[in-house]
Image 1 (cartoon, rainbow, N blue to C red):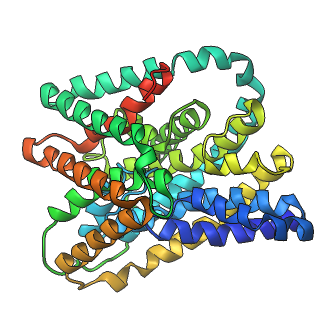
Image 2 (image 1 turned 90 degrees about the vertical axis):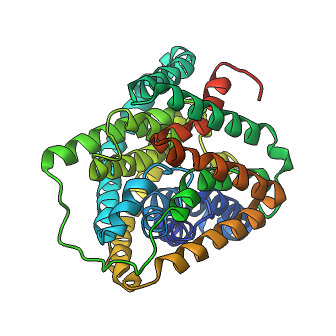
Image 3 (image 1 turned 45 degrees about the vertical axis):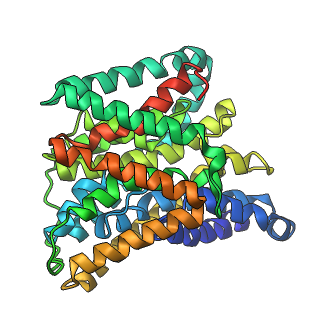
Length: 402
């Protein structure tokens, strides 16, 4: 238990860093920890390494809402949530947005832990049937989103353009270089689609005063967001080829991010964290490595399922406290010139794309930014940019080689 507790604390620290610093994914943390396994394992055993990985994964799902809310930089797992969260920040309600996301993550963890145990016992015998339906499910969700919008023609065109861009990016991942190469290409892709266009179109002037007067959501709205978010996160956490970005798109069909901003933020927070716990269950039940953390776990002698769920639960409690504390620091942004801040953020994204993924990452960032400007030009919701993720997932599920 000493190893589990020590690993959990280490993971919370690393997950906080990866969540707060844009461009650093939690999968990077897994690689760093694996590099120290020859030092950590002989001293405290493999439990410390496994617990640190799980704690970092769970903690990251809480803290990644901070840069997306205050800076408008999307995390690959929660790209769509940057839109309502950053909008609330521009109204002086950034702390509320982060607190709502943290509440969603906490509720998602509370529901996902027992759900992970149940699904690990029930679903393995049905896995063959479940896998077959993944592509059809995504097509159905995408079709509903497209035809239910005000401009189905433009919706479809934007979805396909972004789908082609996403497929192109994943097909040529070997061109990625930089520090992390192909593993970092989602960062410039989603930053270009969801982050930079938002910053380019933002108003100038000083950052509005950030004031927190409580979470203005009714219990019914909180319950709806928690249930929908956890269900979406559980689905993508178990099904092959899916990610939290896919869960965001699915949630957008049930909770509109432009009219139900707070509900959408809470739901995506719940989905993000629930996905982490269901990924652990899928690893133990059917041997699927849903992310870099699970792939790293497969390389060591991981402890029992219950021990890692306990580490994740402790990490969720600590991460909630840290996230709320970070949200309380929003006041330091008051009065900062938004035009200069946006320029700094854009420059950071460009530099990070080159540093993490090389020249090809910068090229993808340019293409994605051009595609990301289309919604504003033709007045359609940005949700259809999720074609960049959904189209490759559908092709993968039908075993079409990218």
